Image 1: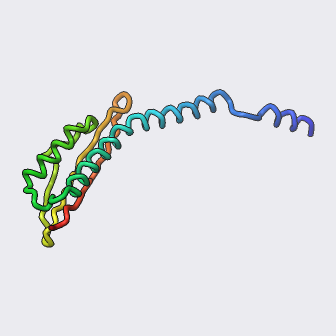
Image 2: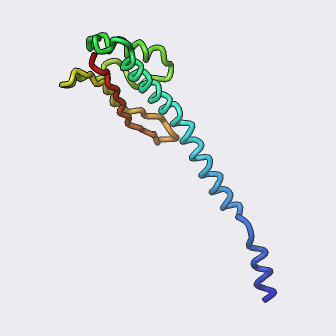
Image 3: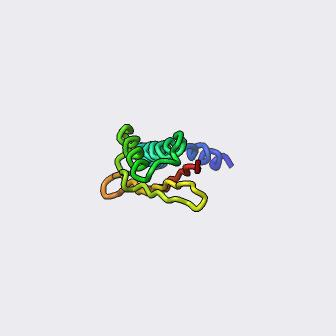
Amino acid sequence: MQNRLKIMKKQRGMTSIGWLFVISLIAFFALLVLKLVPVFMERYEIKSALQGIAKEQNAFKLKKRQIRSKFSKRLQISTSVANVDRNDLIITINDDGTKTLYVKYEAKKHFAGPFYVMAVFEEQATIPSG
């Protein structure tokens, strides 16, 4: 019985290999987060640009060329947008007179060594009819 208690006392805690594994996992996820933050910042900027155009007064009167120009100007102001340009914006005119602004794009970031992280985003906004 006393031998069992001695063995149990010696086996408490994590080994150095266990700690190394835990620290490696934490480092992996920290690096992943650091690489993905700019991708999601870019997504936020694109979403804000689309919603800003849709909320403009008299936006329903704008032609497709004017909407693309406004979108391009909003993206130029933002420093974090690199994967989207004005040609990626798809504008459709619906039967009820509303216009739908739609952007689909991929963001790819180098992770480590030969590995990349890629995210695919779709954003849209609707310009109500006048």
